[in-house]
Structures are given as C-alpha cells and as structure tokens.
Image (cartoon, rainbow, N blue to C red; front, top):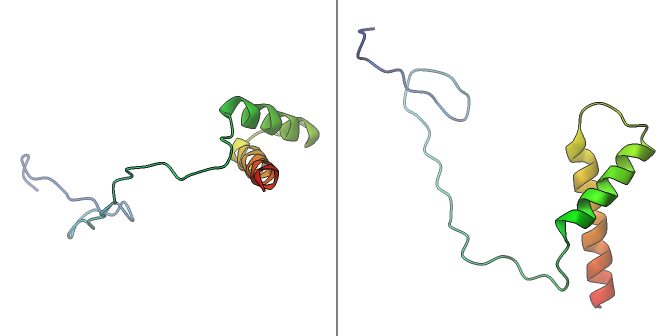
Amino acid sequence: MSKHARASVNPGTGATGGAATAVAFEPVTEAPARATPVEREDIARLAYAYWEARGCPYGSPEEDWFRAEMELLRHSSAAAE
C-alpha cells in the first residue's frame, strides 16, 4: 500500500478492504407523542434506586436506566387512560 492509499472500513464489521456498506437514516421531524412526558431526573432517580437494590454492582447502568424508563412510561400511559 502506498503512503497515500487509504483502506476502506466496513462500518458494520470494522473490517478493512472491499466496499463500505452505506446506511441510510430517515430524519426525525417530530418526537413521538406521549400522554405525559417522562422527566430525565425521574428516570435517573428510579434507575439509581434499582441499582442500589441490586447491591450497587459494577457495570451495566443501561439495564437499570431502561428498566426505570419503561416503568415510568408504563405508569404515565396508564395514568393518562
């Protein structure tokens, strides 16, 4: 490879060589409608409580965050009905 040549990287695999895979994304023009917005602070508070209840383990904070977010979304949609 010459000093000016570039290797292409396939974003899906990180592999070099060959053609890169193109990925098209649709622009989001409007946020999905929700009956009651869930506040980030509320999610953080509940996620922290879940983390503490699990014994404050290292790693996987997303697990508690997603659990808290889903719980609050379920609760807010049930309250709107």
